Image (cartoon, rainbow, N blue to C red; front, side, top):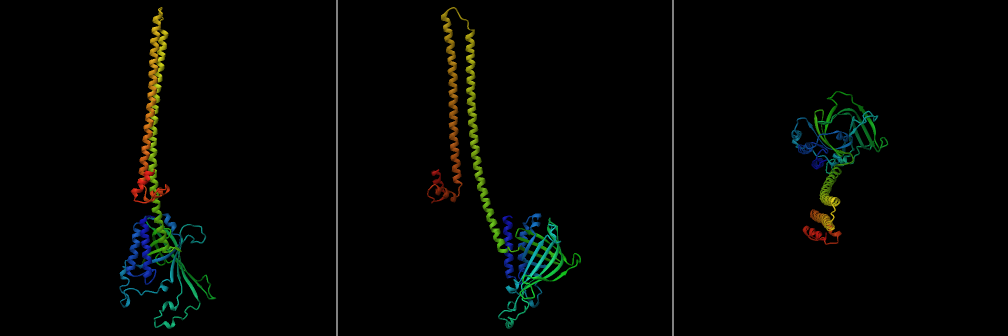
Length: 427
């Protein structure tokens, strides 16, 4: 879920919450202004919601509590609903909180329509309308002329709760371009719970009615799920000639918990993005250092190889000169005169010594060049490391700088530039 869709989703939930609290009919929004605000908030969320997938189809399964809904005739504006109310009433009368909160609607989307659990496809949807009985004191205010009968008991069987369950056959018609569910009313069950000896405390079915199929127009309809996540669902549909926009939350989650969970998710996303950015910067620095070290090592190896090659060449030249001298010495004709022989030997020996000295001198020079190059490379590496360390310190946040200074036993007071300089001096 992106941050943008999360923001618009929370906006829709907050709109639904505030409107139902002020609505004269509770979760059933009927005033033109409420309908306009609610449907507009839903449309803004739907506009940025990506196409539905099988993931959203699977998330449909479960129990969903209706938190707000609008219902109006097709092609009829919301402002026309209350235009012709009797006695020139602009809005329906507002009911008391106890009356508005006495009715809850639950939608159960199931996969066990045949009762054998053999399928994982959605094939049953139950609409459960729960009603908590009211007393006359809930209906009649103390200031009313009828206040004398406020304590009259109209619930002799002590019914604590009753609910009507509308059981539908269901089928997912499509996932794209719309996640559409078709349903047809199959049966109606009345369940009553009470405290008297005639009723069960946990409730029992006291009435049931099977509805025969009368075609697509009599007891069927469809709805599109335009937004679905783990805890919130938005649907638009038609029941007969009525168009509906409904918002559900997962049962036992509630509006406040759903919005709080989303805020935690946004903070988690921000924290993860910060961690990724920090890790990326560290990876770049590490790779830069590795590249510089690899380049320095490669240069050093090349220079050492070149020096060894020069040394090898010098040794080869020295060997060739020795061979030539020996060959020359062997082929030299010994003259009868002893003095001439001695001069020739001295000349050959002198040449040989000179060649050997030159080769040795070349070898020493090559080794000295290698040492100088290695020293220069080491110096370059030290300078590169210092530059990287300086750059790393300058990119730290004030919090990270203070943490480093505190670990080094140094003062953490001053502006960021003072902290940077103090840490650089310490490093």
